[in-house]
Image 1 (cartoon, rainbow, N blue to C red):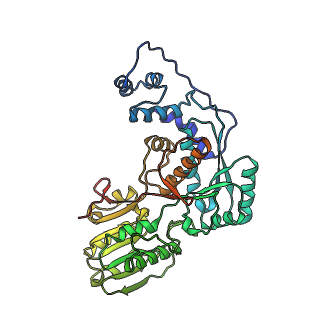
Image 2 (cartoon, helix red, strand yellow):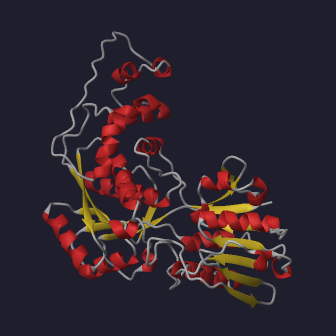
Length: 435
């Protein structure tokens, strides 16, 4: 697969530029000159020997072998083989506030492009850049999108931009991969939401916690709201048979700004004793690196569960100091924010061996993973790229009437993801099994 990377360089440049050429890519046709039939074993031999075009000459339709069929689909998209549908063009627009979402402007566009290039329909993907998320700027961009004939829009916005779109009430189908519907009051049938649910993740983690529950967060609005939700849920758990109904907008880490955790300078300490449970909450500034005042010989936190609402670098620092000061944590809990392979390389196993992480990126498609990898894009660990792909898949199904690749449920216009608990082992994330 690596030897084909040079073929994808033009595509990578194209994807980063966000400019679409009106010159169609040339189609490739492979003529089968083999007079003999080629079964599954035969085609596997072609693949093992690197005879890709001999394989493709025989793989002119869907294969029963799942792995071989995924390879067929990937190479068909890479070489733009002459198998495109003659149906209507699939048109999707990207609404991108570059200054607010930074690198996600490129990565969400790449995720969308990677998905489209693996499909058989011709497509048009166009990016619309906005300087900010003001109502005027968004209305101008969406008007241009509508005038250009687009009906489906992927919009990785923050809460501010999303709310302005709700207020505009325009006749476009818009998907927000960064926003959970709990964060907005709308009944519009044309607005769709894809962010993962951190409340559900927190609920699963809290079931694994022991008192005292020690919560580390930063002082951003999101950190405060998520910590507040976790504290309340731990002390007064919602019955399993009742639907979550909270006005705390902690379902995604975007909130009011793209940065998940950034805060003030002071630290705060809050201790809330309850009959049999105790919650201790620390709010840390970005500059805080020494946790000795909080951890060393602190009997109140000994043998407790530690819940980290902090980005991965800060989390690694906390975990190493828990070991340094012999806190004897019962376990260390974290939501999606620390589901990152960097955790495996930047922390010692002794520091993370009792860690449990909630993860909602549970469905994987090898073709899309490879297509994204060729564009230096990640949909395995990056939840925003993943939720973007889920939304593009949903829109593609609506446009073409083809089956969706992902089986993620959508209820009341919100994607509902399955959530699992994982442990970071010595070299990978593995399923968590309660002892």
